[in-house]
Length: 262
Image (cartoon, rainbow, N blue to C red; front, side, top):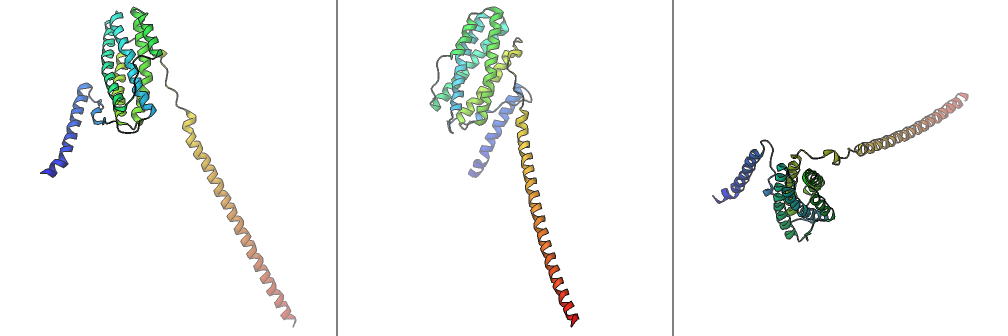
């Protein structure tokens, strides 16, 4: 029976995790899966790059200004929706900040304890505003900041070799996607002010084809040169053979004429 447990127990556990995640996904939004973050190890194993460290620091910095910004939204806004958005984002950043600090402790990363200069400027801007002006500043500053960090998180999630950073990146990705959605639910996001995605580079996409085309031209020229050389060699051989045949036949003809004279 021991062999049975060794073989089937891990499979049963894995199946259970899949079922739990499937149920959670169906409860959240039917047909849309929820990333099973618990399947990612958290052992601080794997090479740690400067980009990995930068992400952990940025997650910490995000909480240092978005938590007080959310608190201001609850106090300074007259719009109940903005107040609720601010409360939700501030509370979620408190949880994300715990995750970032736990990861930094495992990885021995030193974290800041104050917002950076830009973030402090945004907080000062919000502090000086009231009512609808505050609402617009709060929503636009946070939506722009989340839009910048979102692709950075995706890059680290896809490339990091460290399992603790990979886990934090996946968690941060889910937080940031949630926050962008909450901010957009305010219906006052200035989408025109957000940067647009760069157009796909036509030159870059054609480069491999152009390179291949050049290679094809070079190959064709090489092949043609080889063919020309072969033809030339064959022509020389044929000419030489014809010359030898002509000389042999000429010599035989001359000998025949000499014999006929005698």
